[in-house]
Amino acid sequence: MPSGMIRSGYALVTGLSNTGKSSLLNALTETRISPVALQPASTRMPITAICTPGNAQICFVDTPPLESGYDWSIIDWVDVIVLVIDIKTFDYDLEKPVIKNFLRRTNNKPVVLALGKSDYIKREHREAFISKARHINRFASIVPVTPLVNYGIKDLMDAVLQNVPMRNRLFPRSINTLNSKRFLISEQIRTQLFSILPLDVAAGTAVQIEETSHRDGKLYVRANLIVSRASSKGMLIGRKGQTLEQINRLSLSAIEEFTGEECRLDLWVKVREAWTENKTDLLEFGYVC
Image 1: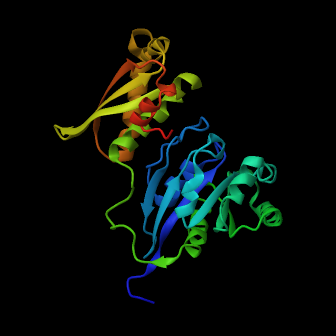
Image 2: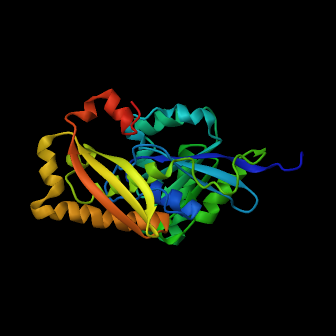
Image 3: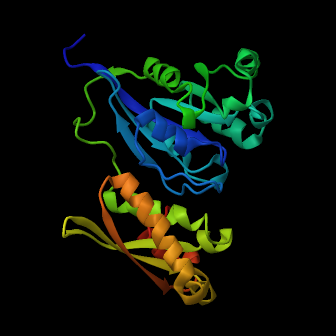
């Protein structure tokens, strides 16, 4: 084997909405790169996090939910797929057409089944769930996980590494994501909207970063919250600006946790009518059409 060859590759993290994909990616990579929300379907674009377990290197890719209609041609260039399914409903979920269609598209690539929220099942019963899953589909590995308490994370990482090829290192050790800092900051802000605003208003609000710079030892971020209807502007601002202040406070905390820096955040609300229906606007705001 040529010198310098290591376990190195791409691992796709996918599943139905609200199964904990983003939490799992953060636990696997020991980062806060992928923002986490209680509301389903908050991930809109792939978010990458690169980790180096031992002498290996894995680029994990967090994706929108399987129900989102995302272009799954990404499957063609990853090495292994981590399918996250709620352990309580996995047998029912694996029979859903969207899951079956996805598995048919994997082109015989190894699929590791991560049985999420495994803390809902007693430890002594989890092996029975694993055995049942083996009879439903031929997965490369099946691992019960609970990202919030780090349960099963090492086992899942080992399962991924077993299915990643030997090759030269893909990225320098100093790189921990393929996404831009601006994009990741905008996602931290956008995710907070789902915890404060009605779902339709949050989904119809884009985050546009105008500036990131350092001032007086702090990270300064200026961002626009762009709504698709004029009537939504008042909802984002709220009475005497209280809603916007709450969004600012939660977003600032999320950005500081993600960056590890003390920050100052200026948010402004603007209207661009029907931007969600305009392909040019969608591309400008970072959505895939």
